[in-house]
Amino acid sequence: MSTAPAVIFELPFKAPYDWARVLRFFAGRATPGVEAVENGTYRRAIEWDGASGTLCVARHARKHRLVVTVEGDAGCHAEALMPHVATMFDVDANPAAIGAHLARDPWLAPLLDAAPGLRLPGAWSAFELVVRAIVGQQVSVKAATTIIGRLVMRAGEPIADHPHPGTAWRFPTPAALADADLVQIGMPGKRVAALQGLARAVASGEMPIDDIHAARIPAASLAQARAALLALPGIGPWTVEYIAMRAWRDVDAFPATDLVLMQAIAERDPTLVRAPAQRARTEAWRPFRAYAAMHLWNEIADRAGGQRGG
Image (cartoon, rainbow, N blue to C red; front, side, top):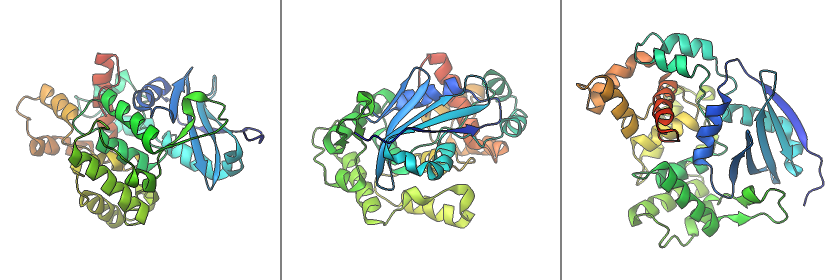
């Protein structure tokens, strides 16, 4: 167990910030053994530049800030961790600008009124997220979480003397997942093959998905990354757009074939039942279509009292 003192830093955000819904989103998709949401705090095991630790994120009780605590040796990399955590929790978003644009649409205006500080939750790792996206194809959020937990037990690594039992596992590395025995893991064989093919592509450096940020690379490079991911077996447009939204931070990404989103749009206009017609209707939401998707998913989650959607 590390004896390094905990390092604490704060990340300011533009209000409003709907922390409760951010936590609900992460809680519903938390990887068992790796991530947990407890008592208003997000927690996970991390490794950064060879140093291990625990990341804890909570909202400041009074100020417009998130309070980040890094326990363990990873705390020595706090300066590098700041922008990474800021991106994961979308603290740089401008809710006033996003809201003013999307509220022009009468479909979205009441959703923005209901959740004015809704954020676009990111991911600690694009690899972790794409694994979850593949596992989650054609299954519920809850079922995907169960299978992800099995993957961690099969291919992940337990952390000795970890102070938080609920986050005492490291997520499988691409190489470990590529070589793992996933027989009877709970997925169809083709999906297992797709998952391990993706893991091999990442492990070999063929698909460097964790090195992409939409705001920091040319549009042509982002398009190339989308095309490269889509070319992998078992990866479809929904998965690519979901990764672009949450991991690559493309705020205009939109998973147009998402069943929940398609149903939400068709409820508003029964003539819009096909994806091409729906895409035309959503053009007015540019350049913030990812936030529009979050609001539509959130509406369903609010109705269900759970984490359905996304």
